[in-house]
Length: 160
Image (cartoon, rainbow, N blue to C red; front, side, top):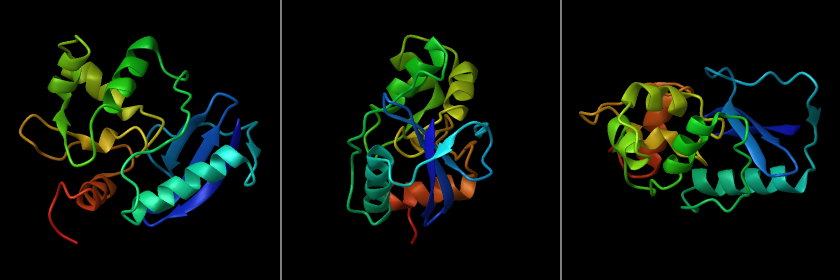
């Protein structure tokens, strides 16, 4: 696995890629972070550089959608189905864990929530767009302050 660190407006992020695509984007110190032993730092890798460019554009409000090949194979089949469902949530919109589960034919909001929490691709696979059933901010592996900041950036929550 190749990786690099990116200094985002919300803190240091670790980006990782395989030959198949971007396999991880984590905030430093977030829950469920990766074990990087044996990984090779490669700040010149074209795919990682492209991911950094697109994240920078996103944080500046210049990018709505990401155009990156993704490698989601680190998860179970169920987790991968949840992560693919997250990709269908457009910028500016949110959903609930229950609704996300129904979209993949599973009435299991807790299991869906656990899979969302294990999403290895912060921001690009937009798990921050999933809210509690009453629209409340609920868990986010990168921290609720970051989730709130991402939703504000996307115009979902008010405030600067």
